[in-house]
Length: 267
Image (cartoon, rainbow, N blue to C red):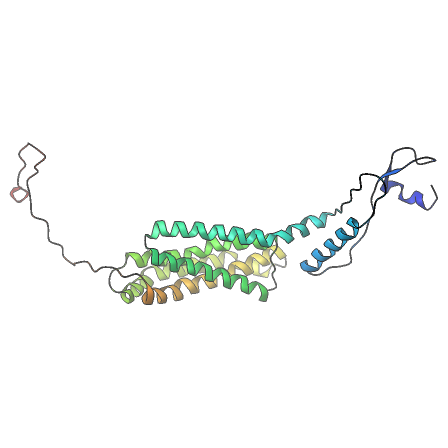
C-alpha cells in the first residue's frame, strides 16, 4: 500500500493483512453537500448521488452499494410525506363524515358541515404558500390536527340548526343567536392560547402558530358565515309542529285485569 493510500485505511475493510496479498471487501467514500435551501433540491441531490453509486461497475465482491447520511433519513421521509398526508386526510374526512351523519342525523346538514371542513382545509393548504411553509413531517402532523379542529366550528352550528324550528331562514337566524357567540368565543380563546407563539423564532413554534391561526380564521368564517347562509338557502326543511298538541283520549288498559281509576277522577 502506498503512503497516499494509507490515509484511507480506516475507510476500507480487507480480507487479510493489507501488506502483500489482500482484497478490499468493503469501502466507503465520504462526501459533503453544499448548502441546499429547498426540500426539492435536497431530494434531487440525494437521488443523483444514489444514481451515481448504483452506476459503479464492481468487478469483485457482492456488488452491493448504498448511500447513507443522517440527513437522508429526513429527506427520504419528505419524499413520501405528501402521499402519506393525502391518505391520512382522506381517512380523517371519512371518519368525520361518519360521525357527523350519526350525531347530526340529517344527511343534508351533514353534507354541508363536511363541505365546511373541506373548504377550511383547502384554504389552510393554500395559505401555507404565502406564509412560507411546505409539506414536511412537522407541518403534516399539524395539518391533521387542524383538520380535527376545523370540525368544531361547523358541527356545533349544524347541530343547532337541526334542533331549531321554523323556516330555513328562521332556523339559521336562531342558530346564530344561540350557538354563534359560543363558537366565536371558542375560536377566540383557542387563538389566545397560542398567540404568544407568533413571536417565536423557532421553526416548529412559528409553524404551529401560522397553521393554527389560519384554521381558526377560516374555520370561524365557514362556520359562522358560510354555513348559516348556505343552510338558509339549501338546508333541509323541517315539518312544522303544532304549538299545542291535544292529549289523546283516555282508554282503559285492556292488557291489565286490575281495575284502573279514570285519570279524571283522581283526587
